[in-house]
Image (cartoon, rainbow, N blue to C red):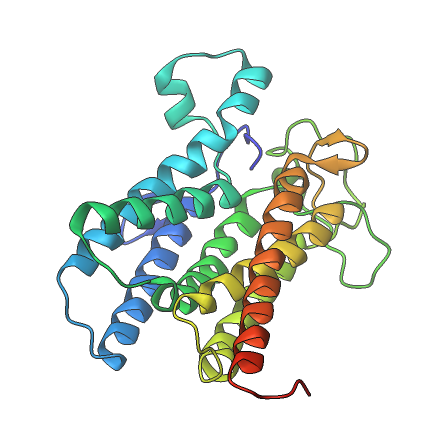
Length: 270
């Protein structure tokens, strides 16, 4: 996330609310509702799940902030804690990583033995789709494009985007956040109606979502307009490369383990 000069706001019931924060809250609320529906469908009523949710949200927020601290300090020169917390950016990838760590740590702390990824997967997908609406309305949308769906921003919107040489009147930009919204909504439906009935290993539903998002996000980064850090790749892409390798290795290892088990019981490979 960039550090805009002036954050857009929405007037709601007489209160002025930052646009980005409003949609992040709505996304978290929608995710919580889906999470609750999944726990009821699976007949899980363990109150420790509430602590896991709290830990996941707390570490997710912390991870989202920590992932952009270095960039905020480098751009602004402000090393104050208040500046980093109030004016610094947030990273969705940092938030996902923090939430993943938070879920594991909280489960250990409260002694919850089961995996919870299957409960979180559709909730996170829907929450991300809604939260990205706030990003679309408040951040740099993407790089220049000649595609007919490219967006031409108003002078007022362009004035909020710092350090962007091509963010000028008349230049069409990729609506990269709309691509993300479409992806997360598609994954929300796919997780519920296609993958969920087919997943046989507890926790794999969330890993499927993470792998799909890692691959999608790697390629969409090329039209996001984020700062290039090494050999044409952004910081997000450099983070995604090892993450994707680990996820692919996990599924390949699981497939090989299943293959070995079939051979052990006398089945011949297809």
